[in-house]
Image 1: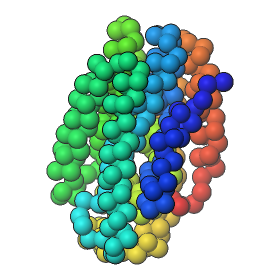
Image 2 (image 1 turned 90 degrees about the vertical axis):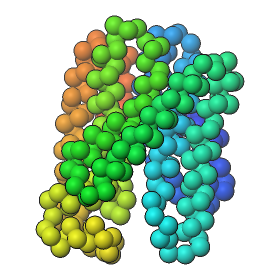
Image 3 (image 1 turned 180 degrees about the vertical axis):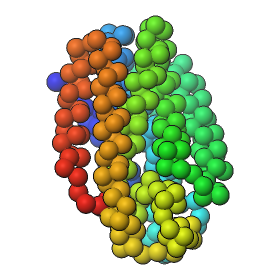
Image 4 (image 1 turned 90 degrees about the horizontal axis):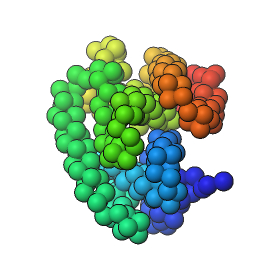
Length: 281
């Protein structure tokens, strides 16, 4: 059996200094396993498919790591400041590996495509930052932005599959990315759950909205809001909707290997989200 993307990336993810001094976002590989399967199917090159999937995974992980760096510099102590610095360096470290890996695979042309993808992601981040300054982003808009910012890296490889399948590729990966975004939100603690913040700003009372805007609240208060508004159940329902839609797209491909991979991934994911816990933990 082929190693998973996480196994292939283990040497990069297990950097001792990064593990010791800072906490990284989850290394989510569902989309990248799909990418590897599709590339293998249409290129028939196992080594290249593994290389591309690993490159995309590390680059995306670097971008996700940078997303967790605080926008302001109001950190409680020197240790927190050092952790922030290391998180920036960790994001740079993961992102920069794609040059080396693509060179080892003998494909330097993809370097430019991925560099353009990073530029697009950063442009989207700037647009989202400007949009969120007035604190008037709906949950639906937040999820749309989150999905859009995770698409450019993996879209760089679309040219490697037949053009006749590009429309299906777009539909399938957009929904799968939504599944990943929702899964990550569901796994996040209340403090790091961005969907919770935007939900309260959209549906909370004036006092709750004021506290979220000012950032003046205790962790226990935020956890209480997650229970009050049934955030876990809300995220789960959105996830299941996207999972059903994704399964529909998979069936349209009429490909047994894709269907098997969907069963492989969907079963444990859906098992984890049902039944629901009472709050975002």
